[in-house]
Amino acid sequence: MIVVILKRIQGSSMYMKRAWGILVVLSLIGTVFAAGCMTQSGQNKGTVYETSLKVGDMTEQLKTGNIDGFMIWEPVSSSAVLSGTGKVVAYSKDIWPEHPCCILAASTNSLQKLDRNVTLGLVWAHVKGTDFVNDPKNHDKTVQYIAERTGVSTAAANASLKNIRYIYETNASAVKGFYNELKNTSYLNKKVTDIGYSNEDQFFDSFVVQDYVKEVKDNLAKNPNWMPASTNATIKFGALTANSHDIADYAAEKEGYYKEVGLNVVTKQYANGVALMDGFKTGEIDVGSFGLGPATLKRINDNVDITIIAGANVDGSALVMKDNDAIKSLKDLDEKNVAIPGAGTVQDILLRMAAKQNDLHVRVK
Image (cartoon, rainbow, N blue to C red; front, side, top):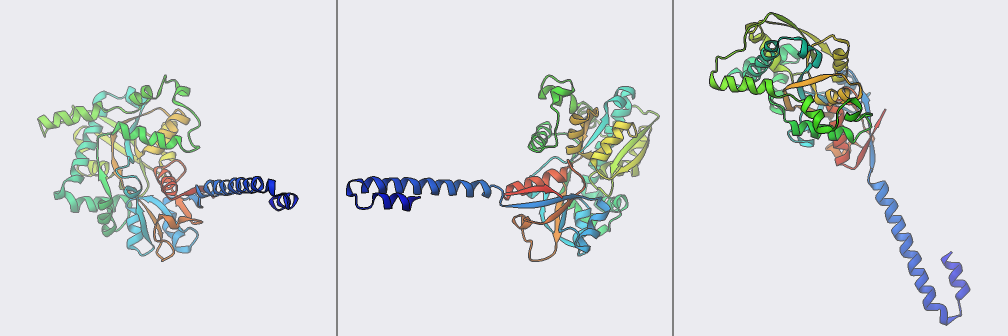
């Protein structure tokens, strides 16, 4: 087109300057347009393919080459590395430092039905269990408990402790932060106003209750031997398969803390947090330790009425990939197939964050 214009004005010197002006403008428009296209396409330079797998199948699927890697909780990640199956490309704390992970939540219906001392006793045992696993004097016993609870070697159990921090208090701001990350995905199909709340602040005031932990913590500070009044109750407890994030609760059982306050805790395991929330919905469990992602997602989307009564851990997951030179960092995830334990899980959100940080987008396979 530019050539045609120039030919038509050739030989007419009075229009030559004007023609060159047109040429420059058109050239600039083309350059800007091209740059704009490059920027738009450059925003997502590649694709990470995401697939959901059962936790127990991930290591074998990586061995056989059906997947290129997986984002999973401890101690599964440490076990895969020590077995020579893969290598850690990034720990979750590298993707989102001090990110919230698992929480202790109770069915709101169960909270209303149970004697308050039952819930207080449960939280007391959780706090005592958390203090137990965080005490360096109990390191060897904690390693043994992780190995028993998850089925990994003691070496893997020991390695997993380096990548996780156990807590019992809940950071309300971190919970809101995770909610905001969920809003960046297509998973949330409802707003808190759709389930009866006036605004987000009102929702979080109901969703996160810190009274039980505060009461336990304050009483133990005054008297380390304090415990709530003993009861006689059976609690149906939900836990995740091969997950050491709830090791404080396992320690509470093994160390007899539940028994001291008159609780009989019966545990049922679930493949992921989404399945565990379904357990709340059907009344299979009263209490559960699982990821904040599914807890928030199903609380809003499906109105599964639960209340967070304590924290469990921060960090504690890792991206494990094939142990080869082709994958050295998160930037090398383009066109790779990565497994997660389920859509909407903490590990799913972490993978999406890692992809975004490296100009990649996630496509469900």
